[in-house]
Image (cartoon, rainbow, N blue to C red; front, top):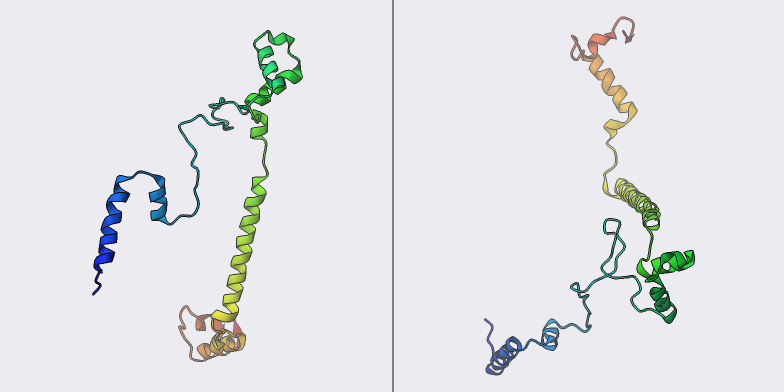
Length: 178
């Protein structure tokens, strides 16, 4: 039976109210024995993402603009006929990382999938080969062709199942199959 010494019991009771009353992350981190502090992403703030089903992300791709980008944003407020194609493309790239055509183009992910499938098929083949050699017992002698020929001759000599079986299809006078 386990016994707690009075000092150990006192230290357990003394720590419990302190940990329950404080909400600091230090106490929680000490209780979990973690040595790293991991920052979490605040999902309540707008995030940028490229998705085909959502045409406008919550925020632009580039938040912090350079002076040239700020000037271009000011120029954007005017008539768009005065903007060059390069400026329009730059404005688009400030807002979005990829175009729809770039999002839809094939990424070559199928190569990884097919490679993984072949890898696991090859590994499975090696496991089956290893089991045939080291795990399964050797084939019984009844699977040999000589043994099966002797067994067939024995069944014919005993005239096994003479109505519809082997003996019905064997011509005993000629010594061959009918």
